[in-house]
Length: 296
Image 1 (cartoon, rainbow, N blue to C red):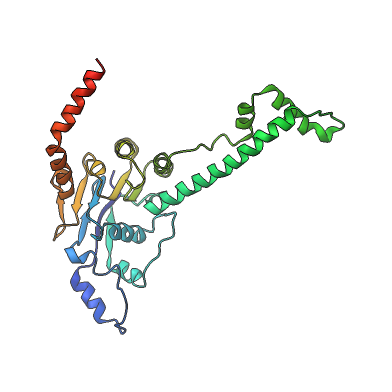
Image 2 (tube, rainbow, N blue to C red; image 1 turned 180 degrees about the vertical axis):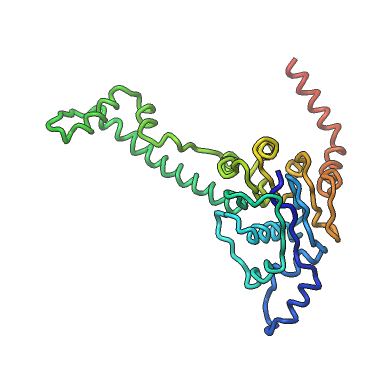
């Protein structure tokens, strides 16, 4: 599915004309001006999966945020705009095949990190509650309780529950059932699975952060299924070889000047990984043979 068809950024000439009209000349920064135009990044033509690839400072995160703000997409974390962000957006333009659906959003690494912190805080709170419930279980189970009035009914139920269950069963039944302790990678992946819904546009800024290689591959499969079966479109900034390998992705190499569309196997960092593992292929092969021998 394609909702967002194309998007354009101002070129260096338009930016120069804008600077000439500024009465003050002592600004520390004109951000996001002069970032994307530096490599003549003028236009994106979108596919169901479009990837912005490049090193730190290449402008891929800037481009993602500019698109998100121009389309007024939902986001969880507060985005600190510069003084010139609104002026820059006025120079940007876009077109859609279908109006961008409600529920479309940008997901940044800050969103994921904040979510993981919230999960950790809830788990720490549950851990403290667990300790209290362990002590409570012993007090309730072995208390000499007598019901004297209807006001004691709730306490009677707790006494009966404690006497009919093991300590761990009692604690589990008293805690929230829907909160579990996750590893960082599991929490991050859970965030994507909760936020990405059917029939919407999603901008993902470096989603590989906090994900192990195995979880990155799981995310790739999740995103590919969302495109194939559930009407999603993705624009992703990344340098992860796993995400770059997504089927049918159109990849813009922001390290090139001018920015160019490439296959993932042509990208410099991917080829560096390939060359490294190729040079160490014998070691992997030897280890595999040893493992097969141990398993015989």
